[in-house]
Structures are given as structure tokens and as C-alpha cells.
Image 1 (cartoon, helix red, strand yellow):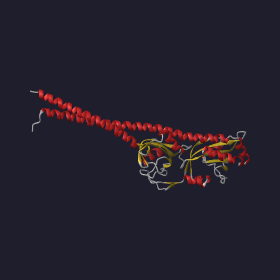
Image 2 (cartoon, helix red, strand yellow; image 1 turned 135 degrees about the horizontal axis):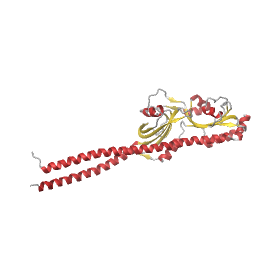
Image 3 (tube, helix red, strand yellow; image 1 turned 120 degrees about the vertical axis):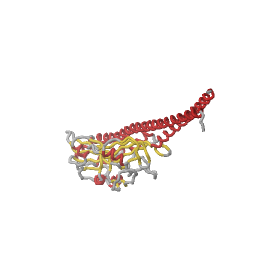
Length: 355
């Protein structure tokens, strides 16, 4: 069957239009995806900066409290006379006011004189504690510290119980044999107590246990993400890890509980804890995909002991991308239809004028 010139022209225009439309759609899809993901990654970088500031601010608050308490005359007198009775109520009230979980006074040899959070336990030596050691060396110090189960038990059974976490099998996590985490991640500060001649009489240390403590992560979520939700799920989340285990988080599991005891994915573990490098890209978080930012948490000896995380639910950005692509597709199809109609009319006129 012979195909007319008019039909050939129409088919040629239609083929070219379709080809250009498809190629343009693919390019725009790639550009939109790249732009949205880049924008999300830039945002989580900024969010991680804010999270780091909130975390550091809590350390500074503890540092200020311990520093000013350590220079009080009544504390110096109590340590010199080894009579803490006049201080017990006042410093116990201070713990409550400042939100401290522990507050400990030691002598110049590191022997515990009094634990204001656990008065029945004293007499043990904390000289191996790096914070106490620095303070007895006449230096104030504050930062992050990991306490073992034995160290936690010295602080009290309730302290150790709060820190204990049963590990939850987590998709994409690195294989691990242990079933529970018994150590605790703490924010701690210690300062020397000096006599009137500037000689070290002892040291005061205090801080908070982060296991099951949601103050920092919820503050991050409130400041950074404004507690926004998408389809009933938090748009943004924050987490503090001890090693690769969630000990403080507002990531919610399928049962509607905070996902403590779950673990970070193996690829993030390798990047952040083993290489000591930030991870800023998509990652699988408990049971969903997020645009994430992770960075290592280090103790005062520069050892990697945990991870600080913020993340944005990827589904929100995926929907945004789909809507933009659909909008472009509708415009593109309309343009193709108009182009095809015009090409048909032009070819018809050309054919009509031909002898």
C-alpha cells in the first residue's frame, strides 16, 4: 500500500515529537530527582549542625553547674572536714533542678566521699575515671563518657537498670551475637575542689545518663522539624547511638514505641564508626527510608563511642518529585499534542498546494 506524502510528513513530525518528548522527560526526571535529593541533603547537613549544637549545649549546661558548685565555700569546708551532712539536701535539690542523674564528690586520691544520687554507696576509688583523673590534675573537663555495667552498678542498681537495653533485630544492621547492651552513654563534667591556697582537695563530678533519656533528641526534633508529620509519621527524627545501638531516639517502630535497642545499618556503621566519616545520604532507618545525616560522637580521649543522627522521611520528597514530574508530563503531553496537530495541518496544506 502506497503511503501518501502527507501521511509520511505527519508520521515524521509525530516520531520526532515523541522522541523529543521522551528524551526531555528523562532528562527532566533526572534533574528533578537530583535537585530534590540535593536540597534534602543540604537541609539535613544544616539540621545536623543544629543537633550538634543542642548536644553540645547540654554538655555546657552540665559543665556550668559543676564548675560553679565546685568553687562554693560550703563544699570546700565539707570536704575538708569530711562532713557532708550540711550539703546533702542542698546538692540533692540541685540535682533535681539541673536535671542531673549523678553527682559525686571524691577526695584528692579519688576515693568517693559522697554520692548525692546514691548516698549508701561510697568508699570506692574512681581514679581510673578519666574525668576524675583530669579534675584531680587541676583541670576542669566535660564531654561524653561510656560507663560499663560494673561502673553503672556503683552508681546504683536503678542507674544500671535504666541503661540496660535488649537489642532488637534490625534489617540491614551488621550481624551481632550479643543480645543486650549493659553499658551507658553519659554526658559528664568534673572540676577540682581547691582549698584557699589553690591546692587540690578533691573533685566534683556530675552528669546525665543518655540511655532512655529523650530530652536532647526531642529538643532537636522540636527545634529543627517543628514536630511536623507526614501521613501520621514524624517528618524528621533524631537519635543518639551508643556505638551502633539506639539508646535515645524519636524514631518510632511498627508497634508505636521509640525504637531503642534497634541498630544502625551496616553501611552507616562502616562509614561512621569504623572510618570516622560523616554519612549524608539516604539510609534505611528501622523500617523506612530517610534522607539522613550521621556523624561520630567521640569521648574526651577522641575515641568513637557513638553516633548523632538526624533524618528526613524520604516519602515526603518522593511525593514532591512525583507531583513535579506529573505536572511536567501533563505540560509535555499537551505540547506534543499541539505540535502534532500543527505538523498535521502544515503537512496537509503542503500536500494541498503540491501539483
